Image 1 (cartoon, rainbow, N blue to C red):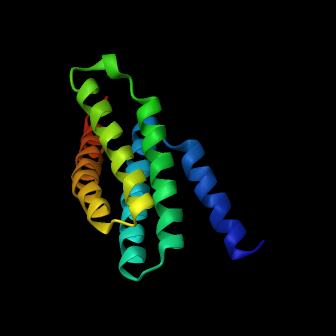
Image 2 (tube, helix red, strand yellow):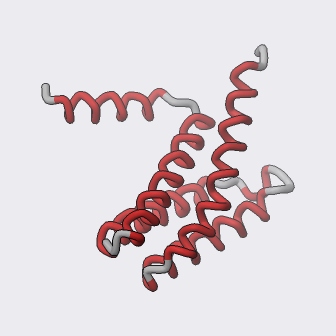
Image 3 (cartoon, one colour):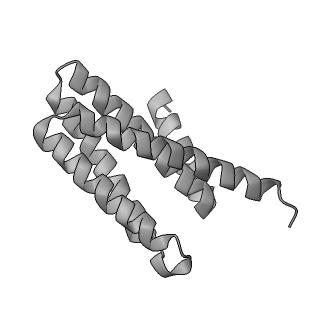
Length: 128
C-alpha cells in the first residue's frame, strides 16, 4: 500500500471514529488552513490556487451552517449570521481576488477555532 493510500485511510478512519465535537474542531482546523493557503496564494499571485482553497473553505462554512442547530442555544442565531457573513466574504474574496477579505475571515475563524478546541478539550477532561 502506498504512503498516500495509508494516509488517506488513516484520515478516513480518524473522521469515521471521531466524536461530533472533534469533527467540529477538525472542520475549523481545515477552514483555517484553507484560508491561510488562500491568502498565501493571493500574495503569490496564484488566483487559481486561491480559488481552490476558497471554494473548499466555502464548502466547510456551508457544512458548519447546515449542521448548526440554531434553536439549541441562545448564541445559535448569531453564529448562523456569522457563517452567512463568512460565506459572503469568501465568495467576494474569490471573485475579486481580495486577500484583505481573506484576512478578515481569518481574524474571525482562528479565534473561533481556538475557542472550540478549548471547549472540546474541557469536555474531554471533565469526568463523566
